[in-house]
Image 1 (cartoon, rainbow, N blue to C red):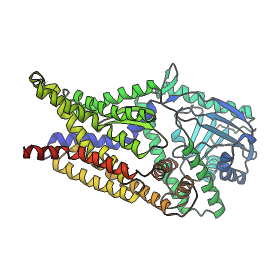
Image 2: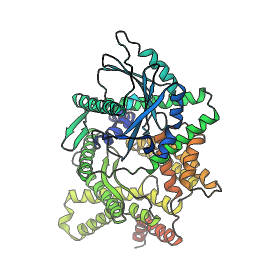
Image 3: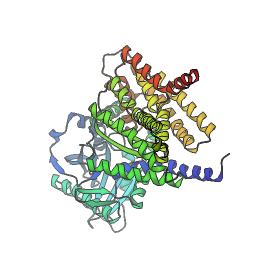
Image 4: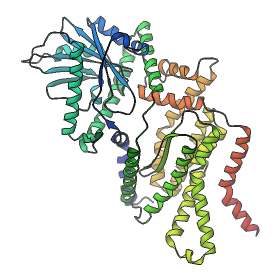
Length: 549
């Protein structure tokens, strides 16, 4: 029976799940550095071929609207996670006195691989700024800027609207083209003002190393609005592509620019997090984990034991990753669900993955058995309730984690040894695991398992599409590298074409990891599965052995 307490817990966790994306994004951004952009002047000849391809369809739109190319600059990202440069290519409309800037760096929610902003400068030193599907990504803007943000999915319609909305009583458009130095000053002014206003609103805070996001209501509000804007932009773009007739030439240019953008994103190497940021993330996630578990009724005396078991478990993964040369390794807690160890390595062998997955539960099980043996042989230790509780909890949690259910470590071991390069088998294994979790949740009437099952259920479509993508690539008889085939399929074929760039990047990375994975050797399959089966069946074997005795 579900009690009133369980219902309240259900409501509490529902609120967390509803705002999960906001909370998750906020936590990630909180540990990133923010720095004033470094702006550099550049010539047209310095634009790379990939950048030229990206801006081609956008420039075509502007030239047809009567704009004339002027100059360009580049600048570093304010959020220093990736070593990316954002090129700003500047155009001017001599008749309408409108300035247009193409920003080339792909950003979530924008029109594929670039965006265009239209600017009118007034004699009063105020400005009018029009975007299409973009302003939600901007932290803050000064008060002397009239901002118009539309979700047409069309730069032409955004420009037409800019001409209407800039007609503000008392404001007169200032004529004159910006020099390269003027474009530099304009870009620097916007970045300086954004930083200053963000500090005033407590969205960011000042540190010795620069700036960081502040854990505040204004910051969470910014994240929430940004996510809403991204979703709205996605819907607008999809609607525009479905209702407008696009010529084959434009469509080809459109796909070409998106393919270049996707290729760029796949080649980006994220900066490794600093040691201090990793420590802060661990402490922050641990405190959040403890508070939330305490709020839902887990005794405070039990929490330290659970957290110690989880830390030892993740340290096993962590040290195995370090041994095999993984980079950017770290450990953090996942409130209400557990903990995780993270690491990056471009190419891993099945043996390495097997050991990394096994290194989590195995040390905890060994420690539990060792404590049990010591307690059995030493009567004084038997009265130690804390030691007994730890040994029991460590044994149970780590053994459960060994079960062949995805996404537990045992399920990942089975996937690595049996289903590598078999996308359909991986998907069916995922469905079977989900069914088991649902049944166990119902049997135990567990709220936490129920929500875990809901989260997995919501990802069914994603797993299915990944499996379909991989299978389609594997069925192709082609010598073209997997990377190029994945990029082409994601940007030209249904049902992937309407997805935003960030989703395609995620799908491409997952697909390429499986496509480039090595198949385990027969020896590894036999010995690895044999040892794994022995661990999983050990309680049953022990029970049978005791029965015979």
